[in-house]
Picture 1 (cartoon, helix red, strand yellow):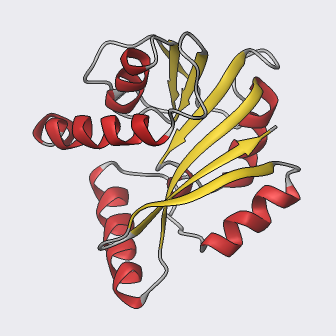
Picture 2: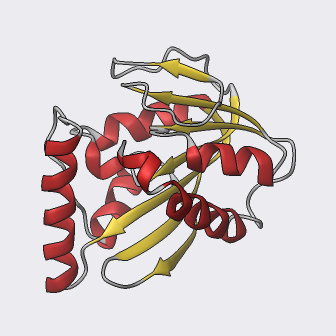
Length: 185
């Protein structure tokens, strides 16, 4: 219901996200949308980049038709190096184990991981992030508590996992800073 109500907003944002990624994704690449949710972002990337796409999530909440695989464990049911890149769009703060998820993304990616993430960098954005986390956890019965990291904390996590930060850019700022990270595996 939620995704159906806000579908147009998600589609517009997904097109903006694709434009931000033009320098990092080639047409026809194989993309894993990790934590695909409704599938709207993945479907937009699939069409924009004429990509081969697979969506993976712990629950099937798709409102669009994309190839999908259910994965409820901490290890993805996918072969090593089976995707050109992995897209993780506003997902890491919803998992209790972002390092495990990033480690799995690194394992299945041949080249890059593209991460979009909310960053609580000011008191007002901290309030918005806490509200978002609380409401998401309640609405979707999220089994793990939503946790947000600072930009510095994310960069430290990437370093710990041996991921190379190729590019970082603020993609939106109000009310919450949204950051694009492009990571080399």
